[in-house]
Length: 403
Image (cartoon, rainbow, N blue to C red; front, side):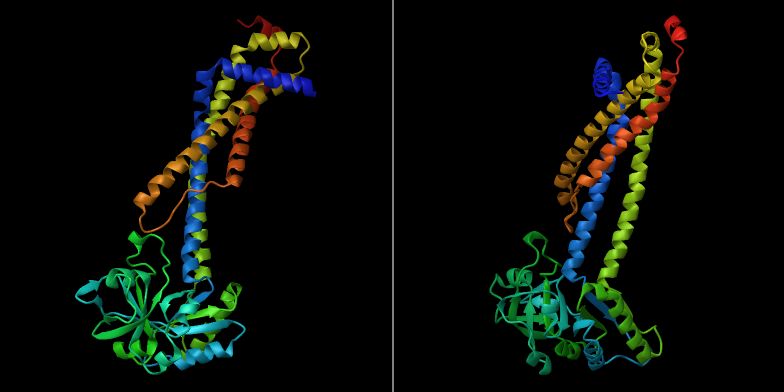
C-alpha cells in the first residue's frame, strides 16, 4: 500500500469514527478507564518509591544499625565496637553508640510527649548529616567527663523555649541538662514537626548510660565508607559478634539500603498486581472494539462488495478496518492519558489532607505514558484484526447481494 492510499485509508477511518460518535465513545470507554487506571497506579508507585527513598535518605542509606541485647550474661563493650570499626577502615567510616532514654522530657511544667532523648557520641551528628544552627554539638570532652549537656532539635527549641533555648535547662527523666546547641530544622512544615527529626534531644552516651543505670549500649550506628559496601560491612559485623557470643542469637544487624531495596521490591510487586488488575479493563475494552468492528463489517457488507468489485485487494480492505480499530483505540488511549493526569493532579491535592504524616504524590512518568499509548494502539490492532480479516475474505458477489 503506497503513501497516498494509506493517507486516504486514514481519512476514511476517521470519517467512519466521526459518523458514529456516541457508539465510538462507548467503545472507547473500557480503553479510557484502563489507561487512566494504569497511569494513576504507576504514578502512585513512583510517588511511594520516591517517598520511601526520601525517608531512608534522611536516616542514611550508608548506615548499619546494630542491636546488641546480649546473649546470656555476655554483652558487648563499647570499646569492642569501636575496635571493630578501627579494624575495618576500608568498610567503616565511623561508629556511635545510641542509648535511648525512657524517661519523659520536660520543659518547666510542660511535658513533650513525643520527644525522643538519645545518648550518642561526638561523631553522631555528623554521621546523621545534622547541622548545628546555634551553639555547638556534643564534644569528646562531654563524653569523657559524663557532662550533663545536650543538643536539642529545632522543634524543641521553638515550642519549649520560644526559639531561645541556648543556655537553658531541660529535664530528661530525673536529671536536668544544659542545652549547649540547637540543630538546624529538617522538617519544613512546622505543623508536622512533633515526633519528627526536629523533636529530639541528644546527650553524651556516657551520661545517658549512667542515667539509665547501664554499663553498655545495646544499639550502635555504623556509617559505611560507601553505600555499596553494605553487604560486606554487615557480614564483618556479624562475623565479629558471632565470635564474641559464639552464637548468632545475641545481636541483629540492619542495613538501611537493604531495607530500602526490600521495601521498594514489595511496593513494585503490589503496583504490578494492581496494574494487571487495571489491565483487565483494557481487555474488556479490546473485546468491545472487536464487537463494534464486527457490527461495522456487517453494516458495511455491501460497501465491501462494491470495493472488491472495483478491484480493491484483500490487504486494502484489511488495512481499512485494522486502521479504524487502531484509531478508535488510540483515541481512547489519548483520552485515558489526559484523564489519568487530571486524576493524578486531583489526588495530589487530596493526599496531603489525608496523609498528614508523610509526603506522597502521584507522579506519572513519560515512560508509563508512552507504554500506555502503545498498549492502547496494540489492543486496537489485535482485537480489530479478526473482524478486518473477516471483511477482507468476504465474497464480492455475496456481499453485493447482502441486504
